[in-house]
Length: 434
Image 1: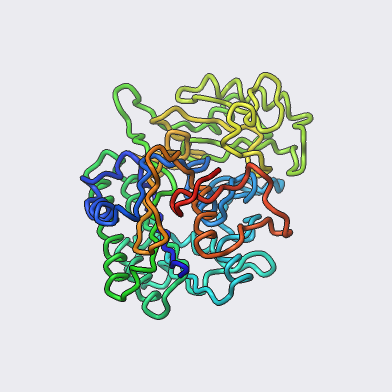
Image 2: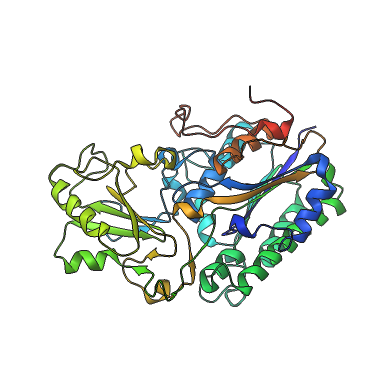
């Protein structure tokens, strides 16, 4: 009997807060179903630790250098164009699980319910490239007055209600859910706040509601539920030791008279693009001197931990050599990647709303995420003690194996190059990796 798989992504759930104290119902479930449950307290997300790249990693099983979603935003390299959001399904360069299911096993029922409208855009159909799930719920189905006034997001209870309504119509073989409340409260109040803790416990209750519905409909015995996060969350509010945690590198460069570059902030990291470097370039050419100067100024900026070069820049460490595991060798990554120290964030251009956030993410300290796997499906096994912590990149290959699907491929039909794709977590299936 093939299982039915539910992937619940608790947006912004830092691994430190996935505890029995804050998520009592999840941990009680893991205990009750210990013969078919596993919990990895510190699985690892993909860099940068942002929503869009990690959701795409979770549904493609590939890293950013393969799927091309290198952040929540990017610069298209079109002269005079401003930075823009990177939330268009047409930009994804690897098949999603939805695409594989719809094109190779159309009898499978797929759905998604997302608390953030931009994720509906990432999971949309693009002719000749991607296929959407059979049913897709997003906050845009709600009256405007029922959505968050500032973000347009839905509350977790609303998202789950939408998901359960879709599931009542047809039992999904694959369902992907995004719960946004934890991330929203982390940004607004910081991860150490009472509001963040309440949001974590609220997400726990929403997951329990899903499990209760599966039991009530007689579906639990054929279900496998993954609960994870896309990234963690750092406290970035001002402190006596860190009175000014906001870095506006673009302003520093303008004050220093440096032009010819486009900075794009991503919370804990910032991309710096050279205006004269094309997407297919293998060298920075005449921009080398400018980029070297940017790197020198960035290193002198309070709150900057590292400055790395995607393409060779004199005197700047190579991104691929220092952090090969970040897998950011893609043209949508800037020529320079600047990394903030924990507790600092990049805001470019300076925005008073973003600058007032008390929590943010993007850097390597936000990579640890929880991963729980539990269900009633008899083929599910507990991971033996000592099983290495998987990555977010391993979730989609595991789901594909459970559903009898092949792994997602590049859009031209070729296999994803070795090292850029995850592997099934065989321990969950009672199999040895050797």
